[in-house]
Length: 403
Image 1 (cartoon, rainbow, N blue to C red):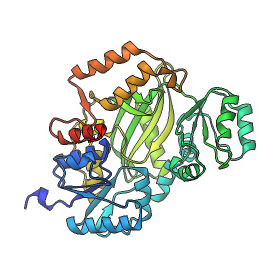
Image 2 (image 1 turned 90 degrees about the vertical axis):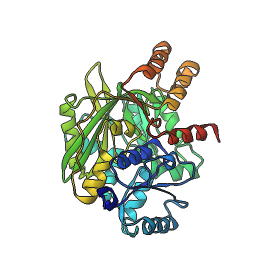
Image 3 (image 1 turned 180 degrees about the vertical axis):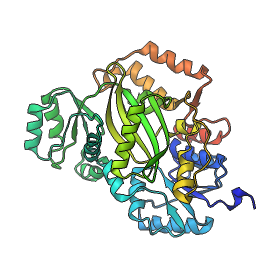
């Protein structure tokens, strides 16, 4: 038998997006037999040539879904499971011993609870010397009024645990707004009043100018065995969210900040892959922690193309206890999601009034020139499009037009 044939499969749950697709591509390129698990037959990952088998999970995050996973494991054999979303990670952590021959590769329950809670994450970060934004967590309306009287606005309102509050907000008919900008105490009070029916309020966080800086690590037995970092060039929504364009950053930059990030992950007790996200202001040099993502992140394709090997590390090191052979990092790539870029351009060119951050600098000509110019840059790669694996892109286009 060849080495490829004797390798246990890697199950990847969540292949509807570029994240799961990139995991399939990375592992498949390394010769790992990949069983992709989707929640619908239109998932882009089901079309990848790097997939050994595709499966549909009809009832995720239920007991019936656990039975489906066990049956999938019986069909394809004992192996390791990676997942993408926080909701699925939480579900699997609670049921890690109910998956039959499948071994999920997950963080500990305690560590994951910390990174899901922005307040606890910021406390841990401050304790290891990381700059954090001034924050307040009102628990009562009286707290809200005290914050309004004393907080240095402008501020951003964020839920400490969005997944945790979503059911209560939905039941009350209140929209879950992940990030809301308020510039004065009166604006804050008007926004906070929306949540009085549920008696829960978002975290109030100091507004920090700058761009997104992501530092990525694979932690094993308390040590960072692999690291990577990027800067966001463009985000959706334009004022800040997730990357639509990002650039790899050489590891000889932000070295002190990398070491602080590692100390934070060590303090949390983190094992496996994680993203430590900052808001970096080039004008002042200040980098302020935003959050820790204890999962594979939206711009993961850039890490894949750059040879970071985080998925392979999870399978080989976290799963089998064997350090894989990894290439030298490519640190000069740019990665982009064109569909999201088009949506972003539409907002900037045609709907600038919908940009919630009033300090966002609208530069239409610059944005158009950069968008067009990136098609001509040889170092640009794409979240979904890949010449070696074209069918996921075709499926993505068909999904977008409803075919």
